[in-house]
Every structure is written in C-alpha cells, then in structure tokens.
Length: 202
Image (cartoon, rainbow, N blue to C red; front, side, top):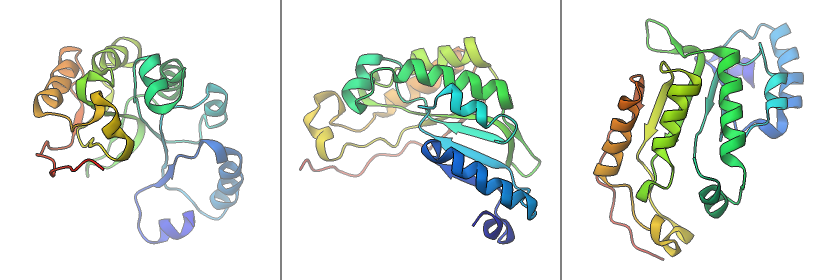
C-alpha cells in the first residue's frame, strides 16, 4: 500500500493513530524500503504515546503530527477517560521534538521533516490552551509549528455536558491565537473561523 501511494505521487505516508500497530509498521517498512520506498513518514497520533514506543521510531519517522488535547488531568479524565493524558502527552511531545526538531517545509510549502502540533480549542477554555502554548514555548521550542483548530462542535453526549454543549466562539478562538503569540509562537497554522451550522440537541 505504501509503495502504491508513492507511485500515485503522494507527498508522504501518513500513519494515522498507529501506536498499537508500531511493530507491524516496522516490519512493513523493512520490506517497502527494500523495494524503493523513499517518501517521508508521518506519525499522526492523538499524542498519548509512550516514550518507549517512540524510541523504536527514532530515525524512522520524519514528521510527527501529534495532538495536544488537554492540559488538565481532571478534564482529560472527564472527557476522554484518561487520568494521565497531560503527563504522557508532554513527555511524548518532548521526545518527538528531540528526534526530529522543528518542522522543515520545502519551497512548495510541503512538510519534509520535524514536529507539527495540533491543538483543538474547546469552549470555556477546557483544552487548557494557555498552559499548552506555555509548555511548547518554554519546554519545546518557540519555533514549534502549531495548528490551532476551531472546528469543535457538540454532538451526541456532549449536549449533556454544560461546558461542552456549544461550539467555540470567535472570541475564544482569537484568544487562543493571541495566547500563542504572547508566548512567541508565531508559526501558526489555523483554520479560518466561520460561524457553525445551527445545532439541534438530540
């Protein structure tokens, strides 16, 4: 499949949520590289990756594209059922950056190597944007390429959680951008904010 994507002219091989199948990916890569695979490998994850797993990928992954979802333990447990997401996530982000460094982009605007962090803004500051951009600036790099996303909208059980039962406001999104700039994070990729569709609770 990887060689087929390369033959079709793809810019990279994007491995989405690959953590649980890393050993099999490594086996497949050994075969694919021997048959001519040369495209950059993108490790696209939710950011809940063990350092031990990432050590297996040192020198193999070209681009890490993790999420930073939450800065608060209680929020992570309430919304995703994970107590230690912030601790594991921060350790993973630092490990990824040590391996690949800041994101490098070629003349055509195509990523070639490095770290690209995604952060979804949540209503009522639930994602902890202030803490996350501070962490990136102070413990990773002020040259971190950060994708700040505003497309959250409530569905299904989110309507049962008062703090999550509405979309992100323009003010909340612009505040997130401002917080990043204040920390010296100027390499921002952001989705253009647009008014959401009218949502009807279930």
